[in-house]
Length: 107
Image (cartoon, rainbow, N blue to C red):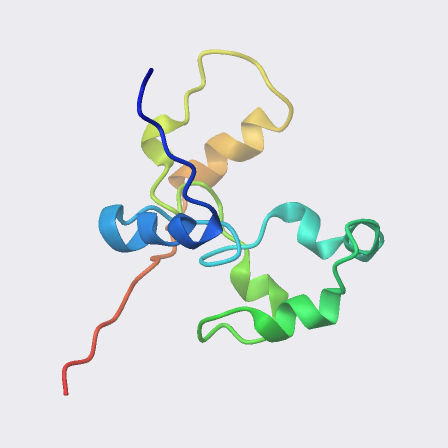
């Protein structure tokens, strides 16, 4: 009734291009990617994953970790409730954020 169409993973990467929305495995790694046992459980070889990641960060996985504020998601974080590590998140919201940029070259 809503005329929704399944587009698949190829459409996933378009959100960044069209809307500037950061996405897992394109702009950052989800936290569970650092746990080799879990990656094995997913049948995803950790070293192979790092070798296939796009961008200039290379295989240093720590260069791919971002806080929500770094990804431009600070406006959706609220402190109206208690949660684990709230104090740490409040401090991190005050720190200088990284910038996630896209560069274009014109020949």
